[in-house]
Each structure stands twice: as structure tokens, then as C-alpha cells.
Amino acid sequence: MDEYRHHTLSVLVENKAGVLARVSSLFARRGFNIFSLAVAPTDDERFSRITIVVDVESNSVEQITKQLFKLIHVVKISELHPSEAVERELVLATVKASPDQRGQVLELVQIFEGKILAVGPDELTVSLDGHPQKIDDFEDLLRPYGIVELQRTGRVALPKLERQAPRLRAVRGKVS
Image (cartoon, rainbow, N blue to C red; front, side, top):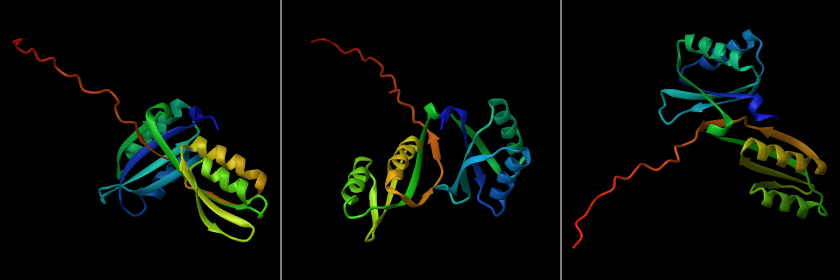
């Protein structure tokens, strides 16, 4: 997956019934496939944040943004470029792990800083959160063992924080 082909929109909406349906139907009416969709309330219970990852051209993103702003419950829209955003995703996977392979799967989970959630006689359920590329890599390395079930949350993202420290004003002191 080429991250730069996908556009990530962070849409702040009023936390009301039917808003998600109206937003997603707008994409469907325009013929855009939603690659990833995550929604949850924010720290202010009046609002929810919808993170939508869509594979469209830049000019189409501008058009869809204009259409989104026409929806009555949309408060704010931000397009988050991958280089200017902190992105995370969660994966839960049940993978085959016979007793002779279990150590290898456990080591893989440990290397990726994942967690073992459940242990069965021949399977493990694991979780991992991180950057979407890290999740892709983890999933690829689990495949040879045999993935029984897998669920990804979809991408969530926020703008990166400014890294620049505030300028300090030089203070001239008296030399004694």
C-alpha cells in the first residue's frame, strides 16, 4: 500500500444519530471507495471524530471536502498528509501455532511489541497497535503460520505536534 496514494481526512462532526451514514453515503454517491473508516467520540461528548482514508486524486479530495462541509453536522475537516500526521491502527489476529511453532510466533509478537491475548492448544490470539506499515509487516510475517481470523480497526490519525521550541530572548546581565 502506497501511503501517498491515500488521503486521510479527519472530520470533526456533531455527535448525533445518522451523521456517519450521511458522511459515508456522500462518498458512495461520488463513487469513492473508503479504504479505512474509524469513528469515536472525542474528549468533548458533543463531537465525534471520523477518520476516513480514501484512494482518490487530490482534486477529487478538494471536491469531496467541499461536499462534506455542506453537511449540516460537519464542524471541521482536516486533510492529514502522512508526513504531517501521527497514524495508528490496531490488529487482532488468531494464528495457528502448534507446539513446535509456538516459540517462533511468540518471538515475532515480542519483536513487534505486540501482546498475546489468548492461548489455545494449537492457536494464539495476538494484538498489535502501531503505524499502518508496521501492522502490514506484522500481518505478512504471520501469514506463513496460518491466519485463522484477522480484524483491523482502520487508521486513526491526528496532526503531528510542533517540534520547534519557542525562541528564548537573550537577557543581558551586568558583569560584576
